[in-house]
Length: 227
Ligand SMILES: [Zn+2]
Image (tube, rainbow, N blue to C red; front, top):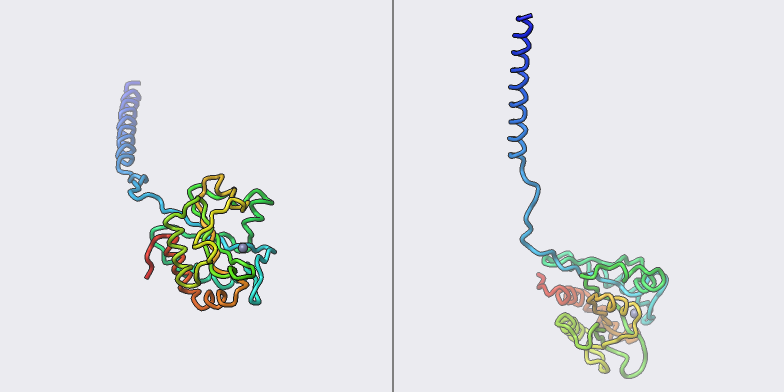
């Protein structure tokens, strides 16, 4: 009887030592566990969403043997992508070129309705028409006066294509329904009419300067100088 009590005392003591030891180990390992929280010192990069006009069955304007939708996607888009990759201080992405943002917005209530309000949207188009004023490009702006970015963009058009004589660089329009969705949601945007697809001189200049135009646009949009 006495012997078994001694054994029990020893057992309880051992158990106590084990429990204390185990608890200590747990608390030490918890203290040593590296923290997974990282302190972010830089603010998140601004996001620019670049949208090729028309598409998904809508050809847009026609001229010089091509369509607006095709020219934007086959010619300008690859150049823009090339320079967008070099941007370091902001994030530049492209709207799915298989889609038409206007249709996505106005028919399916997606498109411009689904864009984050902090995103800046830049839309790429070509004008069409005939007559003395049917040449040169301009920027469709989202406020009555152009932003610094709009001014930089207009300079690119002026340098490589020329400005439309009717607009002198800018046009503030409130009758574009897709743009109005962006405006009502408080989303910053610019719409670029690089020139007239129907004008052979514009078309020649745009093709000839495509690389420079794309680089100039990406620099103007992001306000970053590229190599
Ligand atoms: Zn268009």
